[in-house]
Length: 276
Image (cartoon, rainbow, N blue to C red; front, side):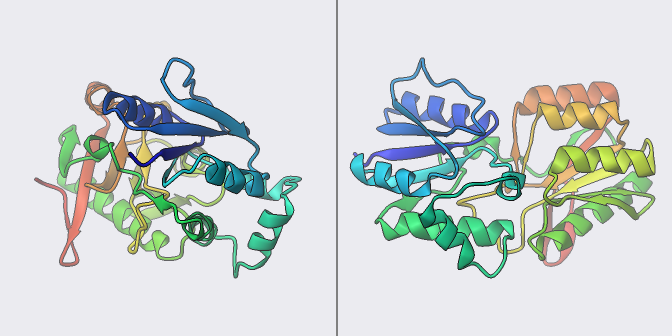
């Protein structure tokens, strides 16, 4: 059986994946990014290693030493670390210096190419996690015709944002953009939308048109929900079949109780489809 390496960043998804891998008898190891790790894997039957984000050559040597054949990237790496006294090793410095820009896809694709250069297959992030992908439909609430227009506008704005590889999230109110996600991440974008738009804004989140599912699948979870409720958002729309929704049953139950509309939508022949 080919050994799989889980490169684990911030958040709950790395732990969820590891639990499923163990339950299915997969031979895997966990490589934790020291600056990001929040999950505990000590109770699982797997080898653990912790490395610093900057020690890229050490990571490659570790993968070779352990004869890793497959790798999966899960969990968030906070990009702003690259701009704050980041002391990369020579291998990573040379790699970053060769890139045309520091957009997310550019950096992540370059890292994937390095792994594949070692003969390692980089797996799609939904491997073993397909049930976390949201199904199309109205998942909570009963949106009015006007709110459906807001959801559609938020979704299309997020979709267009992705074409420029800037972020995945757009926040709108009265069909005017309140905030677009960039390096600060979704949470800060939500706070900015609330600051400028007040209660009643809508959040849209979707994948890029040419999304590479080996990295950066859009994700929402209970932390996202809490922020939306705290700032009195009116709705959330995500991309069906292409967005992870963590703790979906609890997420939708809470949203329904608090009056937040949640929808998962798709583009079909250029048209936005909200209903199943």
